[in-house]
Length: 257
Length: 222
Image (tube, rainbow over all chains, first blue to last red; front, top):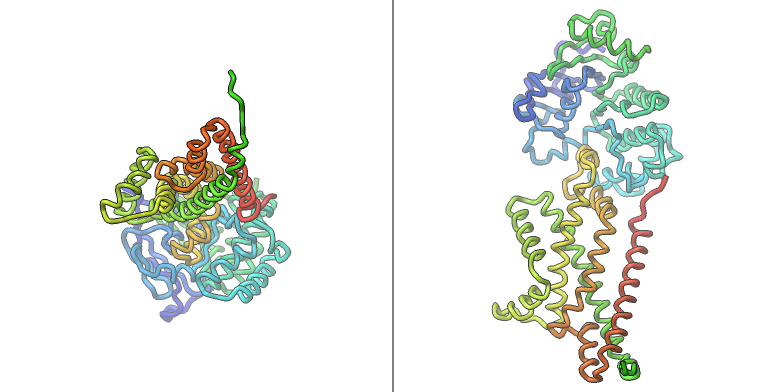
C-alpha cells in the first residue's frame, strides 16, 4: 500500500516521535519514530527482549513512556492523561495469554465492556457479540466458559471481545505464541480476514507467512530500536541490515524445520 | 460422683434459649454481611487507595489484630459514652463484631485480589474500563472465589466470638445461658445444651456458605 506523500491529518492513526522508555536504568525503547496510517497493517518482529511488546503496550499506555510523544488519532497520550479510558476503548488489544475473564461466559466476555464502557443495552450488545462470534467462527461457543475452550478458540474469543468495542486500531501481542501448533492457523485466518476488512493493525509476531500475506510494512526491532522498516517483499528477500539478516536466518530456519 | 442430671429446668426455659439462638443468628449474620462490605472496601483501599488511606487501614488492622476482642467490646460499649456516643448493648455488640471481623476480612480479601493475574486487569484496561469497573466486574468475584474457605472460616469464628458479647449483656445465646444458669444452678445442663446449639449454628452457617458457593460463586468446569 503506497500512501500519498502528503497524507492528510486524518489519515494518520498512530504517531510515535522520539519515544524512549526505561525500566529503572535499563532502556527498553530508544528513540522510536513510527507513523501508522489509517487502515495500515504493520508487523513487528525481533528477538525476545527487543522491546516490540513494550512498543505496542505504550500505545494504549499499559506501559508509560518517559520521553517523546505518542499521538493516537489526534490525541496525545501520556501517563497522567485523564480520560485515558476514552483512548483505550478505541484500541483493541489481543494478548499472548488470551486474558479472557474466566468467571464470565464467552458472550459475557464480549458484552461486558460494550455495556459498561459504551453504555450499550444488553440486547444490542448481545446481538453484536453474536455477529462477531460468527465472524471469528465460534458462534456455537457463546454460552461456554473460557476453560471449556481450546487455546485457539480462546484467542478467537479474545479477538471477538476486542472487536465488540468497535475499535479503530487493533494491537496483537504475539497472539499465536502460546498456542499449540495445530491451532495457530485458525487464529491467523481470523486475523487475515480482519486485515482484509480494512482494520488498522499492529501485530507483534514471528509468523512470517502472515507478515508476507497481510503486512504493508514489516518492522524489525533489536535492543529497543527500530532497525529496519520495509515492505514484506523487500524485507524478506533483500534485508539491508546485518541484524535483520541474522534474525531472519534464524527464524526462517526454525520455521522450516 | 453423685450428681444427678436434670435437664427439666433447662428445657423449661426453651423460649429464652430460642430467643438467644435467634439473637445470635441475627447478630452474627448482620455482622457477617456488614463485615463483608467493610472487608471488600478496605481491601480495595489497601490495594489501590491513596497513601494516607493505606496507612489508616494498616493501622486499623494492626490495632484490632493485636488487642483482645473483649477489650474492643468494652472500648465501644463503656469507652465511647465518655465521648458522648451512647449505644445499646446489642448495637455495641454488632459494631464490635463488624470492626473485629473487618480487620481480618480485609487481609483475606486483599490476598484474593493479589492472586488475580495482572493480565485480567490489563484486559479490562485495554477495553477502556475504569479502575472501579475493573475491580467490580473483573477482579472481585474471582478474588472472593480464591479465598472463600478462609473467609467463611473467619465468619464462623465471628459467630463463635459473638458469645463474648455476653460480657456487655447483649441479649445473645451465651448471656441467656448465664441467666438460666444463675436461676437454676444447673450449670452443666445449661452449657451442655448451649454447646449443642452453637454446634448447630455452626453447621447451619457452614451449609449456608456451601450453598452460596454452589450458586453464586460456582466455578465453571471443563
